[in-house]
Image 1 (tube, rainbow, N blue to C red):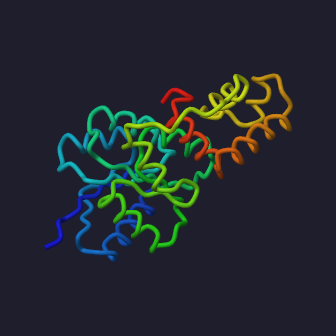
Image 2: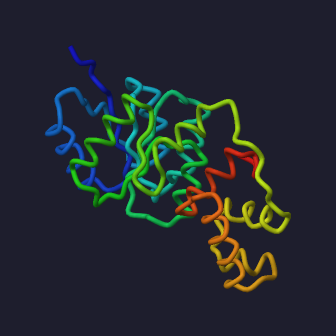
Length: 216
């Protein structure tokens, strides 16, 4: 007999929560929505009075206590709960920050129902789910391997670029910070992508963290 998987929905849009609940109920009867919350503060109150969910489905932009603050709070008080972000935000800076905070998946709200179903199953059974911009293999390796890849020959300017790329700064802001042209910064980025077979900024950040080239 399959175990019941308890979910919580955290989003300030009630209509979206209602549609999401209906979708979940149509996917499988093994998923049970324990409760819904409008934001992080509402979630805190309900976690103190309701059964602890296995997975929280959470938006990023919410009033009073947003997704970033909520994930940080959860990591301190309920580290065993797995978090799947559902957001319309696809900015690399937002995704990078959420990954560094430890979310287990990140999906756009306009994802297909089949992809959402796969995400829920993967997060519960494997512990993570990421779309093509970050492979599950890379995330799993980053979070679970004790050993690190051998040191790569990175010069000091590349190290500085990597450190700034792991922040929320845009590439143009990084260029200003390093007193370089955006074209030069683009050259750094493309050279590192090619040298280490990396395809996105998110992948670059995770590779940098994994190899101790920047602080996690």
